[in-house]
Image 1 (cartoon, rainbow, N blue to C red):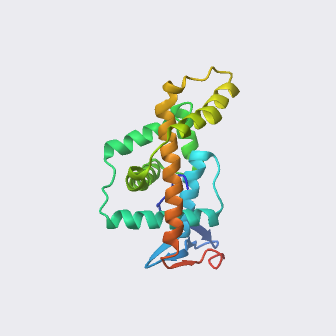
Image 2 (image 1 turned 90 degrees about the horizontal axis):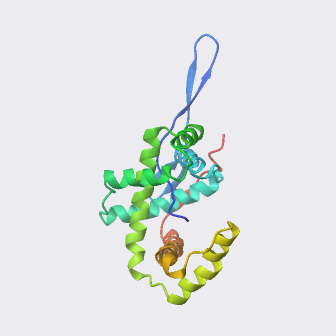
Image 3 (image 1 turned 45 degrees about the vertical axis):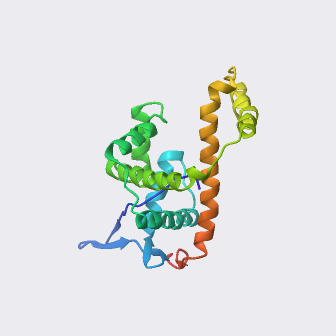
Length: 215
């Protein structure tokens, strides 16, 4: 799981049927029960659109549902701990960083529209992802220690080959040290979070209804 990460927006699809008098059918259903909560198919589709926006592609419904269950675990514990929501300024900074991943504001907007996300849905998704990411960072970062040998290995195996592949001169180790240390910390957070989520899954009641919910 890359604290990506991943969440909630409900979308209702409507089919029009009949000739003279149209009727409506809401296309949504429960695809999982986690303890006393539910996950809807529209939640799965919302995360799929967010993945499409970020990566240009999305995972399968089953993979996304797994992510949503993991995110339920993280959010449930964060809420129980009364972990604070990110500030508006923090959300806007995160959105700005996201926009810088694209070559221009126009490309950013084009991808957003193509993915089917409204500006409001994107902002809500960014805030939700940030909340979960911040909580995992707070939970696991204090226990992580980065060894010098790991920094040197990352520099030799990742930084230098990447620079050379781009036809660039690799930065000095000292110049890249802060970046490397943070990359290693983030990797360790992901690894610890994955182990914790697997253990947590065994302690909660999950009913997967995705296949049963297909029309």
